[in-house]
Image (cartoon, rainbow, N blue to C red; front, side, top):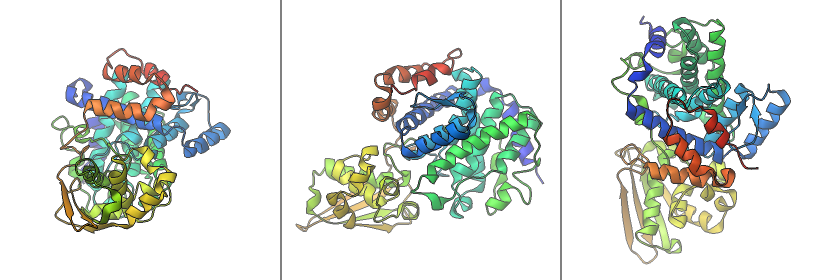
Length: 446
């Protein structure tokens, strides 16, 4: 049997950080900007308040910043909360071929250790690149069967990314890193049954906390199996069918997984984005009146109905998993930011009526970022719209300016004037900038 976990640990520990290419570092900055914005934006959600209340009751000393709040808590709870808040809006980044959200489980753990140990932003960025590499390689090894079984891949493999990134910051040796990966393997988190509830964003938050705990325990000598990924009763064999372990140990440096990352212009599951863009085109280009629509037929990739097939959503969280609501929002509002998923919008009469006119059918020839929309009007005319690559996909990425605009829209009500300064610091991250200069600016102005 190949030494999969030991080989992976060796790659994590031994790879020289100065060989990470500049393009990967730049993409990690884009990832950080996007992640920080969505985390701050959702930092006052009721579910965050619930976990903060629990942290006050049973948590440890104030060590690490809760983004978007004037509060600190211990590293474990901070990782949980910051990871959870960054996924609440379903507005965080995605690597499409595994549907992994790479930042939400890794950045919170990296930020916790970097802030607590007064590390630099450069060290944090490099650690994130390593963590993203690890979690996506493991996701590639076990998907698609892992996801099809009902596991939420961001929660299950996110702990590996967090453990690897934190382990790199802590300078773990080969054995310690192997044990950290083993501890992460023993803590898979996340079921797709939870989509549309508060528990879905809990998944990456718990993965961040689990990965952090794994690395910290391994640093102290805590042991695990030395083959937790590849053994007969290990993570890969138990949680997947016919896992491809070779992708985990392919040589490092030829291709970086962070470069596969993509960012969402719309605050919902990424498989709905082509449909939203088609709806926006119907409104903006054809200037239609939604009341004149007789029927909307949307042809989609099979994953769309599987993941977002809720026909009659009743609240914000359910609407984010409704292709019917997403297309309706695009047509009525010409956008699908967080405001278009508010409970009062989800239940608004004109939105509900338009959702009832939408029919979604599977087209197996379409890719995840494609859609065909056919709008039939009560006057007898039809408009057909084709989206080849939705904005935000790897083939049609969001620009830096668009990411900045998204950041400002999400955070301006919380940061109140500090948004531009924070954006500037992220783009100018260098060797000597302490991570605390970022976390101090990320506090709310309450």
